[in-house]
Amino acid sequence: MTSIERTAYPRFKRLITARELHVFFTPSEEERVWAEEVTDSDEHQLALLVALKSYQRMGCFPKAYDVPDQVVEFVRRAVELSESTLAVYASGRTAERHRSSVRERCGVRYDGQAARALAEETMRVAAASRTTRRI
Image (tube, rainbow, N blue to C red; front, side, top):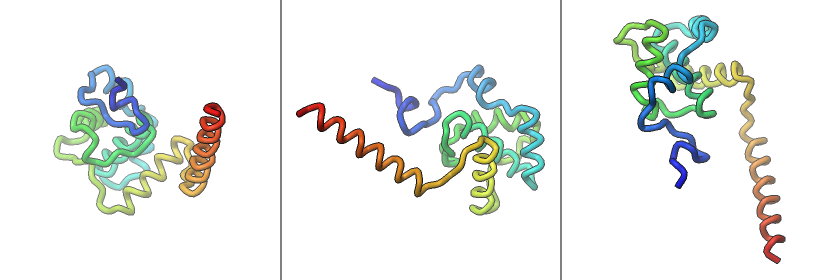
C-alpha cells in the first residue's frame, strides 16, 4: 500500500529525519538574503522561508497548522531567529503576496483557469482511451 506521503495530495511525513531536515529545509544563503529583502519582520521572514522550503519539497503550500513544529523550529534555528519568533502573517494579503513571491522565485506561474482546462482535457482523453480498450 502506498503511504499517504506519496499520493497526489502531498503531506508531511509523521517522522522527519535529521537528514531530511538538512537536505530539504535548510535555506541557502541566497534564500536567506532574498527573504530578508522581501519581508518586513522576523515573523514574516520565518513564515516565508517555511513556505518556500515546503513548496520546494511538496509542490504546494501547506496550511500553517499542517507544517510540523519540527520543520518550523529547524528553519528558525537555521536563520538564527529568536526562539520567540513565530511563523505567522499579519494578514491574508501578506500571505498571498508571499505565495506569489515563492512561485516567482521557483519559476512557477499560477493560472487556475488554464490548469482546470488542462486537467479536464487530460481526464477526457484518459477516459476515452480506457473506454476504447475495453471494447
